[in-house]
Image 1 (cartoon, rainbow over the protein chains, first blue to last red):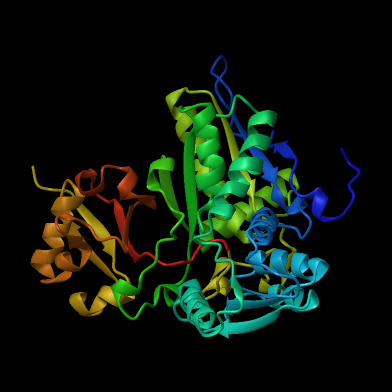
Image 2: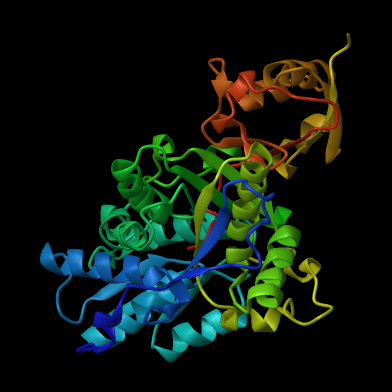
Length: 319
Length: 95
């Protein structure tokens, strides 16, 4: 279906694209190992977070927590804020985002374009600080509606009800599902759905590994694990640094023509690693990975230019 | 046969234990043995990683970029030249 009543209605049903050139070659007679990219940049504001944002707002409206003209508060490194800002604009809410100051300029511009107010949290501590500050601000402004994507079951449910079923419908032969780990909503929701359909499906997390400033906690007890996280849904979990992520983003662009955001590079790196293991073991595989967003919001970092390298991302929250 | 030697990356918050060294060596055929080796060379470091004999909730350890909690945790096996990264758990991901 390509006709929709409104922009919001066009959410989801994103294409699943084969990667014929980037999928590894297998020896003659050996089973195929294929990579599939789910293009989440084809959502209304250009990222997978539209699913989370619409689900959390719908849920808050339904429960009566979100009343007309209310103010929504959310910690975000960009995409969730951008999704919420668009929906808030269309539905008549105000939005306050708490965002680390070390994020790309395009994310700020997009948030402001849709009318969000941004409160910056310090670079040191990365999103940890944004979450901590948002919790404090929420306590000081009890009339604001704190959606809190890290602990809001509507986030997981969105992926259980949409992302997972879409993949299953398009590729019931799926053997591996690879996605980014942040709030954990995508992996928990879609992963749970897919495992219920076929318990053999491997659910693999790729988390971005940033420069040291982002891990600059005051003490270890200030660490953070999202309330939504359930390790039993995952099969494996990889940490991927900026260098590998940038290398894969460029490879995806060069080889398959797909212009993805930097976090997708981390996810693709894990997917290609797993694909290589399957080839070595002579096992066939249909590996689906998530393209979280396109590269537009990261052009100012310079990493897409020919000589752009990962060093420029040091100290930045690039995912 | 002697235990394999691996390299271990230490996060900023734990560097007071390693005289500010970012990268240290340790010996052990399993993660548990490596942590014992670290604690011998850098007293107190092991206790910051473990609680009641398990990895602390806010500590993540990766062997060659893979999370050890999905590789047998403390009994994860190691070979010479493996790279271990210790990181505090933070809200750092795609959000």
